[in-house]
Length: 480
Ligand code: SAH
Ligand code: SF4
Ligand code: F3S
Image 1 (cartoon, rainbow, N blue to C red):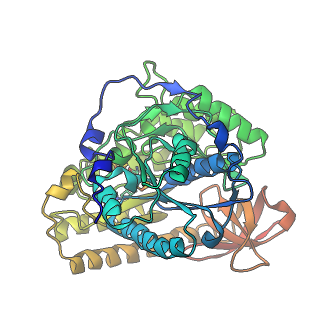
Image 2 (image 1 turned 90 degrees about the vertical axis):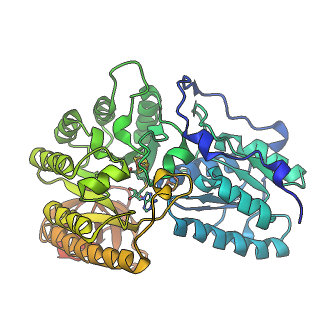
């Protein structure tokens, strides 16, 4: 087998862990297109498959925007594409195995069409174990780049076209904040807006601080300009994105923080503002006040708890106890009584006892979340938790997940009943995929509604009367 080790200029999780004091630069001219790449994709197509969280969804919009400036058109059919990118997620093992399954499938595709350029990017590209596996076993991959250098796609694509060897460019250390990248947004009425990159929390189970680098905030001026131009283009809703949006501005020398930004974004008058994700540790009362004060900041907060037991939380490195979390939860509900709160929970963290898991269930009973994303703990190479003994058998982990999910469903159903016979405002996103006669959209409280209504109202916020409340969705009729 060919020795690929000499090409290994790839990532290092160890280097990525380092949080230097280097100043972050905000750069607006880093994106360059080699002159011979302009129009290179004319008449050709690209296909991007996105895995993982909203950060990746947003990055894929940038990748799409870049490919379109090179002349490529989008396709939903992987077989018709000349450029195929997999924008990957490293959060759990099963996320990674899904990607490797796809890489295997692409080997076949490449046999029938050897001219396809096949690229891997996103969080998995930042992991050396993944890169080694690809270099050893998956020579059908032409190009690998990471989360910090997506603006270099035109240059990397050019190299991949010219060179026979695999192009590998992954920066272990985060770069600067790069502005002015093209983008092709997926939704016509709602948009993702990055407000910061990276994460400094280092929860012990989590790979993200390594794959996304240190926290770097975008300048508020850039964010507000983006929001205003989205509003002028007719967008109804924006979601401010960061791994922990509460940390926004902590890397600045002034007191401008997430509450300040939220307020300024609210003042732009864009109809709906959401944000994700908030870490419970630095969720301030100022933030709660701002959310309560502005009608265009949606009363729906995602507040991941991860576990209901203080000892487990400590070993997860979450920096709050069960009591502190509940105190915050209750303060939010007191100030914004109709606020919906959703969460993330991990079961089977190393050493989690039956009693500790029961604490998660009892916390859930107290909070009666509107929804929760629940996961079985998955050890991630290079994280502190991966060095703890993963001592809970898979059967026990699954049983805990099933029990938790039963509770999640019960509470979701219960919470949805509140909206029965109510009139709610829905941002109409389009025709339901399951039923041509129904429209679909979300309420202010982030509830999915399928309803009978006027197709001409797609893209608008309309009143809908709820006639049925199910576990995962509401059913309604638009009020003329
Ligand atoms: N930055 C966000 C979410 C990041 S990942 C936050 O802090 O809330 C989304 C969710 O995946 C996490 O909230 C956690 O519940 C889950 N997760 C992260 N690492 C995991 C792991 N190693 N095993 C299982 N679930 C994990
Ligand atoms: Fe991961 Fe914790 Fe950062 Fe969220 S806050 S991305 S769970 S390290
Ligand atoms: Fe996955 Fe990376 Fe997001 S690991 S969850 S795509 S930040």
